[in-house]
Image (tube, rainbow, N blue to C red; front, top):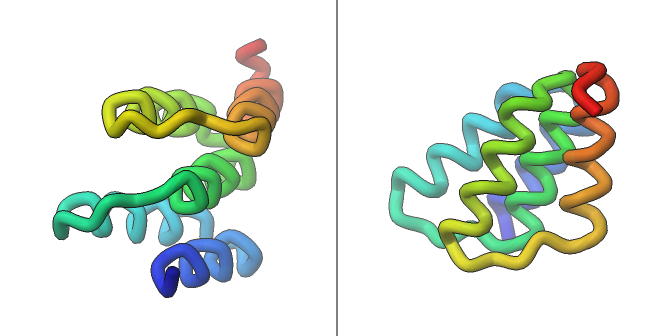
Length: 86
Protein backbone atom coordinates (compact mmCIF):
# COMPACT_ATOMS: atom_id res chain seq x y z
CA UNK A 1 0.00 0.00 0.00
CA UNK A 2 2.83 2.40 0.83
CA UNK A 3 4.54 1.62 -2.46
CA UNK A 4 1.32 2.24 -4.40
CA UNK A 5 0.80 5.58 -2.66
CA UNK A 6 4.40 6.56 -3.33
CA UNK A 7 4.11 5.61 -6.99
CA UNK A 8 0.91 7.65 -7.35
CA UNK A 9 2.54 10.64 -5.66
CA UNK A 10 5.46 10.43 -8.08
CA UNK A 11 3.10 10.47 -11.06
CA UNK A 12 1.15 13.44 -9.66
CA UNK A 13 4.46 15.30 -9.19
CA UNK A 14 5.43 14.57 -12.83
CA UNK A 15 8.17 12.15 -11.75
CA UNK A 16 6.79 9.34 -13.89
CA UNK A 17 10.18 7.64 -14.42
CA UNK A 18 10.66 7.37 -10.66
CA UNK A 19 7.25 5.72 -10.37
CA UNK A 20 8.33 3.07 -12.89
CA UNK A 21 11.59 2.58 -11.03
CA UNK A 22 9.68 1.97 -7.80
CA UNK A 23 7.52 -0.65 -9.50
CA UNK A 24 10.57 -2.40 -10.90
CA UNK A 25 12.28 -2.31 -7.53
CA UNK A 26 9.19 -3.74 -5.87
CA UNK A 27 9.31 -6.70 -8.26
CA UNK A 28 13.08 -7.17 -7.87
CA UNK A 29 12.75 -7.19 -4.08
CA UNK A 30 10.25 -10.03 -4.27
CA UNK A 31 7.06 -8.12 -3.57
CA UNK A 32 3.95 -9.04 -5.52
CA UNK A 33 2.59 -5.89 -7.14
CA UNK A 34 -1.18 -5.72 -7.38
CA UNK A 35 -3.49 -4.20 -9.97
CA UNK A 36 -3.11 -0.77 -8.34
CA UNK A 37 0.67 -0.98 -8.62
CA UNK A 38 0.50 -1.77 -12.30
CA UNK A 39 -2.19 0.84 -12.93
CA UNK A 40 0.05 3.46 -11.35
CA UNK A 41 2.92 2.28 -13.52
CA UNK A 42 0.86 2.35 -16.69
CA UNK A 43 -0.47 5.79 -15.78
CA UNK A 44 3.14 6.90 -15.31
CA UNK A 45 3.88 5.66 -18.83
CA UNK A 46 0.91 7.62 -20.08
CA UNK A 47 2.23 10.79 -18.41
CA UNK A 48 5.69 10.24 -19.86
CA UNK A 49 4.59 9.17 -23.33
CA UNK A 50 6.32 5.84 -22.79
CA UNK A 51 3.95 3.67 -24.81
CA UNK A 52 6.40 0.76 -25.16
CA UNK A 53 6.78 0.58 -21.39
CA UNK A 54 2.99 0.71 -20.94
CA UNK A 55 2.56 -2.31 -23.22
CA UNK A 56 5.40 -4.08 -21.41
CA UNK A 57 3.60 -3.56 -18.10
CA UNK A 58 0.45 -5.10 -19.56
CA UNK A 59 2.54 -8.10 -20.62
CA UNK A 60 4.06 -8.39 -17.16
CA UNK A 61 0.59 -8.27 -15.61
CA UNK A 62 -0.31 -11.26 -17.74
CA UNK A 63 2.84 -13.07 -16.58
CA UNK A 64 1.83 -12.46 -12.97
CA UNK A 65 -1.71 -13.66 -13.68
CA UNK A 66 -3.22 -10.24 -13.03
CA UNK A 67 -6.22 -9.26 -15.14
CA UNK A 68 -5.96 -5.72 -16.52
CA UNK A 69 -9.03 -3.65 -15.74
CA UNK A 70 -10.60 -0.72 -17.58
CA UNK A 71 -8.15 1.68 -15.92
CA UNK A 72 -5.15 -0.37 -17.06
CA UNK A 73 -6.38 -0.66 -20.61
CA UNK A 74 -7.50 2.97 -20.94
CA UNK A 75 -4.14 4.26 -19.67
CA UNK A 76 -2.26 1.94 -22.04
CA UNK A 77 -4.43 3.03 -24.99
CA UNK A 78 -3.92 6.68 -24.07
CA UNK A 79 -0.17 6.13 -23.83
CA UNK A 80 -0.14 4.58 -27.31
CA UNK A 81 -2.30 7.38 -28.65
CA UNK A 82 0.06 10.02 -27.29
CA UNK A 83 2.93 8.20 -28.96
CA UNK A 84 0.86 8.05 -32.15
CA UNK A 85 0.96 4.22 -31.96
CA UNK A 86 -2.73 3.52 -32.34
